[in-house]
Length: 274
Image 1 (cartoon, helix red, strand yellow):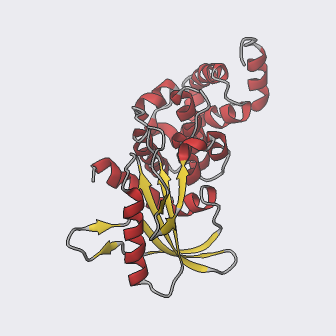
Image 2 (cartoon, helix red, strand yellow):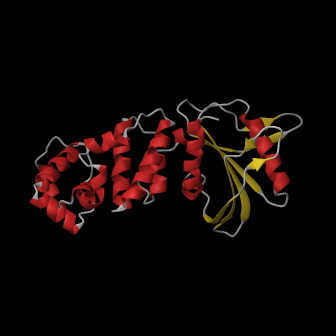
Image 3 (tube, helix red, strand yellow):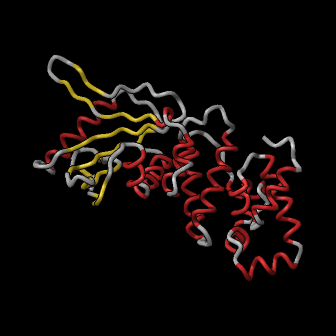
């Protein structure tokens, strides 16, 4: 198992509830992560295993496998996981999902059909999901998944800027939390072979990571001090660049601390926008 696979699975464990809600359409009330190692001659672990309760009160075992490459033997592996899980939890219902997040097109089967056996599980291909659905959520856990979706012929860097902008707005002045989501974003982007340099992306927006709390959220003391040192001029320069990138007035106001009214006037001065 590659290091990227291991790290990606840790990311998905962190955002399990949003994965279940927005990708599998499961409305979960409680989640209890379960041990995934089964005793075999070889070490075989399921990626994510949890006992969950949905909004209707039903309790079941949720098994999720995360794949970033196609493997023809995946149905057999999924079946083996199922038998191991059923032996450990014989009286509980099990629902299995395969989440494909790789760059190549999905080509793995999601079932076994033979005279002796008919077995299937749910396969979700992130390529088929539109990124705006995730971008428009108010949860950072959901928003970072947009990088795995169909980008609708948009440049990856454009999508990444949208994601970062929303993360900035939602994490407010918690710079540590923002860094955690940026790190997860970088890991997920690597599954699509997107070489993402977080620091460089921030520099393109002319925002330094160390100054995010005071600059982005308009923290009164920090913003006043910045304005006294000419930060207003810098904020206007950033705003003009964001206007050219088709960011909304509301998003630009959140990033720069400028008033919406003056941003509308600034937008009118850029007739080539849009």
